[in-house]
Image (cartoon, rainbow, N blue to C red; front, side, top):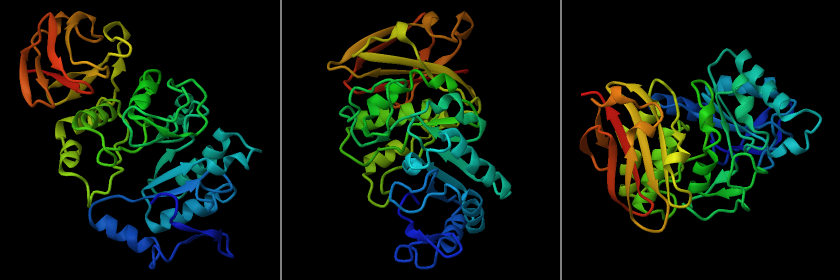
Length: 344
């Protein structure tokens, strides 16, 4: 439940009030129902005086609000920063840390997701007290077109703008992927698969990179009305397995094997079942292309990996044993090749 679940005022005891028009029975019955389905439930608040919907934020009420979330059975808190500009007596880190302590004091295991849009470069500090952190402004359902005003890297001015494209979000992760680790995940924002008008190749690329970069996979589409083709993308178990791999190591961008404006190559280790490595090759240029990847230039691979076999995940076929090179022909515009290297 994102912004909009509460009213614009606290009650006389200082508690956030539920919007009873939207939730006539309150939040707890909803949470109980969701739990009976075997799912977990998340809620929204803000580290400032107001949230993005101008409802009361949790600044100064951290313990009271955290206690209420625990009583309702909440499992996940998205903690925004829209009202933080009015609460400027404390740093961003101090305000987010307060809620971290409050959540822990409840005794309930509540996943703590920071949302300060990468403005203060949270990959350097958010691992100290949160489970995930947004690393950029809000995504929108555009593959290439965005409103980033030229802010395409992780270290340009992130001011909380909305309208970041899928490709720009991936570009920003070039500098951030190495910080990914169990217990502290860079959140690339909600999946836009099934939301806009992306092509099949674009949706496959979107989902593949979010999974391989170990971003939390949160569906942004209305699952009651989602297109069958988009749902098929989201249900690809082999792609989901990349995200859930027990090593928890994200793929990293390989500049020496990539060509700016045409194609990009990312790779990383795996350790689930017989899977040992994954390589992503994406054509984000304007023409179809053929690529030959020299295996010894892929970080983590060596002569000792020659017994591994290659699987093209989206094509659902084997490409045979790993040789000196990996040849890929006819990669279409916007298409991504996800290659999983496994033991026999």
